[in-house]
Amino acid sequence: MYDIIIIGGGPAGLTAGLYAGRSKLKTLIIEKAVAGGQISGTAFVENYPGSIDEATGMGLSERMLEQAEEFCDIKYEDVKEVELEGKVKKIKTDGGEYEAKVVIISSGATHRKLDVPGEKEFANKGVSYCATCDGPFYTGLDIFVVGGGDSALEEATYLTKFGKSVTIIHRRDEFRASGVVVDKIKENPKIKLELDAVVKEIKGDKEAESLIIENTKTGEIKELKSDDNSPIGVFIFIGYIPQTEIFEGKIKMNHGYILTDEDMKTNIEGVFAVGDTREKKVRQMVTAAGDGCIAAVLANRYLEGSNW
Image 1 (cartoon, rainbow, N blue to C red):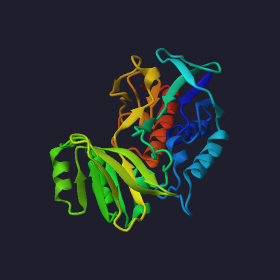
Image 2: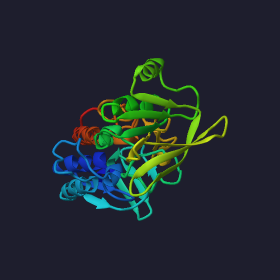
Image 3: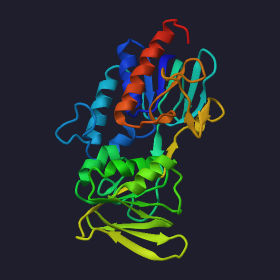
Image 4: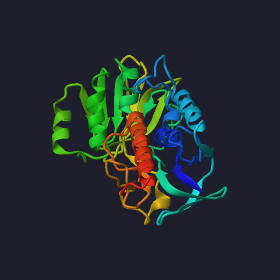
């Protein structure tokens, strides 16, 4: 029997484990793949406090893991089933069954991919899914943003701070984003539009250098690249896929994201959700860590008998 079981070992889960373990709570983190979550695959991290000297995502993940390992157990298993109701929660994995008084869900989300040739090959070599994380690396270069929602257009505006130009590629002739955001895009002289277009391939040598797009109405194929054949930045914002399938029907969600209050509490007593798993507006490593801290501190109070 554990005091707390944390499902997921990304920044939110590892932070929750650190705070819970340091509070002398018997804590288990269950991670199905690599500790660190999405950040472990990021080449360089410059926007996390204290990350200097070209800190790598994997390096930061390893340091966070080392800290958490000092204070809690960590098992690399895949969660298959959960029972969240009642005072005792049960977590079944491909390696065993565990019980706890509190569960913190930190299963994360993955970026929705284009699934085109070159996307995987040029990840961190021109292809990115986070403007805040990687925008500065493309200063002075031509940047291409794929997507048509609020996030895509807002990130495109942000990327004009760095790029020589920013071209938005969207599969329709109208955006799904709010009118105010669309107006800002159309008024920005650094932003170009490629509408009714889908990306078919990302090409290059060692780095991404061009995009092959197809017009959805005419079938015309076109190659987009810099005038001087320099590398380009390709930012893909076509949504996230929350990793919450096993919680469906067992906890309140909205479009797959778990609903919480500002204390990370869900609608089920003794169950918290943190990081990209929960519905939130800002998805960054620093906000995930903040979520983990809040959940662990409030979980400790709950276990001490404070009202839910």
